[in-house]
Image (cartoon, rainbow, N blue to C red; front, side):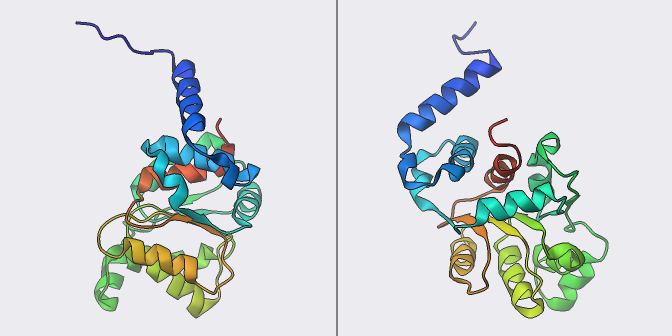
Length: 209
């Protein structure tokens, strides 16, 4: 048995982006956001999410400048870290995930919280000026916002895509509503995930390359 399907990788990408651009109204986004929206939708196949995306005006410029200057990339889980295409990173940027750090379980027990949230405490030495990529746990985004408010350690940009039925929508709304002068991109509601979060970082770092 053989199926009739496109096998050429370049043709697949070309057809995908052609279809996407035909179905998404990009006129509502500034030009420098088009690559991000394209990669984001391409990562999940849901063109309807375009209207659910929220972002700050300076997100792209702040994130790109930080990456170009070699800022570390703080990831909430290994899946996000694995989804980032290293060859696209412009500044030999370090990818950091502290979820499985030896100190994380005891911190979580001490603080009576999730390991994901406890791992945010280990970001503090690198947090100022970093690019944060969240694609899993809502507790990470909540704890990040608390940490920024408590310490005034502000990342250059936040890619906030926690997913799920408990706290995901609320944590992302908290990011949107936070009065902390943050540069960010997120998606309203329950949708999210590591593939979407890493796709945004890849777009910021290397466009559609």
